[in-house]
Length: 368
Image: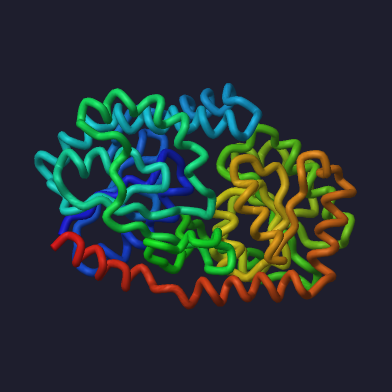
């Protein structure tokens, strides 16, 4: 069987889809992963076969995000438009690939407009694989504006529904009724690696707090602000950032571990993970059973609110992110055992879900 994955337009969906792609390849199937030019190196870095679907670079993405509306709702509409535009622009390249390497099914991400359009054209099944807990329906209004003419041309009134919908959200954080019609799957961490150093998998006697703002860091100073806020608690700080960001702030934080480190290794050593509401960071923390402190969230606010309501983390609203607010919230997560207990309960729920290897069997049945 040949499976074409089209996860999304940033590194995070690539990493979240990788476990299922590995499982499919391990079962003897051929796998190709499509992505815009920016993420092709990320696909190759984790040992999967990349295919460029559109010449969209990292600079293009940075320019778009730099000009995106600050309001989360308007930002989601703008992102929906650009994802839909890329979906349309990617069709010629994907059809060229399919002419010689015909896939038996297509697996797409949550904003997976490229995948169902291609599957519809080829007459093959499409699979939707969620890569995080954010409800992608918030992007639909912007996408509809762009896709409507093409859908009409194809005789469609909407983007075709997937033949199989795979969800990686732990049961305790699902919206009521969300599981209807969806196949649960255990989320497993995949990320680029580097030679391990002892501090990555061991820790000293102090509580450990991991801080990250994800792949795109518009303001490195915000990371310094968060690190200094929690350092006053006497904790060990690990600040995860790409080297070009770390180089700007390392001298400002001489007592912290600053730089990129594999989160799958570091997360289980942490007592708190402080982040921006990023999907992969959230899933890694959930799997490790680590309480989360979320600041600067945008479109992920609803998903992060459910985590806070469950009692496995704290969500700081935009007006409550001063140094003292961050330190106080981190102190609560460290001192109140209930947060850790609830986080571990979610980790146990995730571990009980069907493995990617089990889900490959469903893909095989679907293709047949």
